[in-house]
Every structure is written in structure tokens, then in C-alpha cells.
Amino acid sequence: MEHKYETILVETIDQHIMLVTMNRPEVGNAKNTQMGLDMLDLWTKLIAHPGDIRCVVLTGAGERIFSAGGDLKARKGMTDEQWQHQHEIFERGRDALLGLPMPIIAAVNGHAYGGGTEAVLACDFAYAVDTARFALTEVTVGIMPGGGGTQLAPRAMGTRRAMEFICTGAPIPAAQALEWGILNKVFPAGEMMAGVLATARRIADNAPLSIRQAKKSIRAGSQMDLKNGLLFEIEAYNRLVVTEDRREGVLAYNEKRRPVWRGR
Image (cartoon, rainbow, N blue to C red):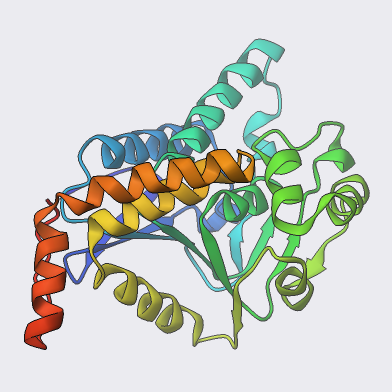
């Protein structure tokens, strides 16, 4: 699967893992309109035609900053209409990211501020270097989180912590982000990507339809009460019973060999 973009790099690893790198290091990988369009295009294509991709990793170029969020220098002089048009592109990209059928891991190589932290929160889970810092700084420049921060942060860390995090705009270190639920693991510099790819490979080794159905059930069920969540779960489960992969998985188990997944 070949994708060439102006502001992001796309690489396929081991056939089933897609590494996506925000590639504007000269401005802290800040998101401008073109990056918004590039990401919207990529996520939309992955939803429509995932091909062999079973896991996505999102990171930033360089060793210091994952993403500084929206590019405020590029926004200088924008009319209100231009600002809102750009943000509509960002919103559509976020919704497409949330709609990816396969898991997406944030590999946070450095600081994540504003929309950078929102991107981390929008991923399914996140690993980071121990020097990374996180902040939703929007209230310090006269706006508020508009990329999902007010909804995703409380779901990750709880309402009271999210209220403090958003209303102060103050940064927190990686260790605190781990404690608060933004991160799953923290690594010393130089070790994070190996840890991310090890997890991505573990995911890619599992039955792809099972992973997609499980992700769908977790995402949808978290918005439901328990009774309806359980009903949704069994509907997702039953769709796997009739698949070739389910039969292959049981056969491989009994034959004591690795299964060969077909994604059907």
C-alpha cells in the first residue's frame, strides 16, 4: 500500500504494520491545513481499504516533539471563516482516526501540546519517552480544546483530573500522564519505538477480524450501559463464528501450529 504525502511519512513494516510520522519537525510537527488534509485522506483510505494493515503506529519526526498541536504561526492573519474551515478539516480527520478498524498506537517521541495531546488521546493507546510532557494549552491562547480534548481526556483520566488539566493549561510529565491514564507505558529515550513495534507485532500476529470486532465492541460498548454493551459484544462475537479464521484458529490450536490468518 503506497501513500505519498507532503506533511506525513507512511511506511509499511512487516507487511501488517503501518508507521505514520508527522513530518514537520521545523515547527514541532505542528498541524497546518495541509497536514490536516493529508491525515484525513490517509485515515479515510485505511477505513475504506485497509488491505493487509492490522495495526497503525502514529509518531512525530525528530527526538524532541511529538506534536505542538495546531500551527498558530500559520493561523496568524486567518479570517474567522478560514479558521473554522481549517478546523472542520481537523475535525473530520479526528473522526476518521477514531473510525479506524484496526488499533492505532501513539508512539510519543517527545512533547505533545494542544492538538498533539488530543491526537494521543484519540489513539487506542499510547507509549511515550520518559522526557515527554503533555498539555492542553488552548485556554492560554483564548480558545479551548476542540479536537476531542474535553471528551477524550475525561474518559482517559476522569472528570476531576481532566478539569484541572484543561482549565490550567499546565503541562504534566510522562510519569504523571502514565498515572493519570493518558499513557500505557513509558520508556527511556531510545527504547520506545522498539517497545511500540513489539506490541504492534503482537497485535498483528492475532486474528485480524477478531481484533477489529474487539475494538468495535470496546469503542461502541463504552458509550452504552452494561446491558446494551453486552448485547453489542455478543453480536460482534457471533460475526466471527462463521469466519474461515475462526475455523483456522481452532484447527491450528489442535494441530499445535501457528495459525495462518486470511482475514475472512
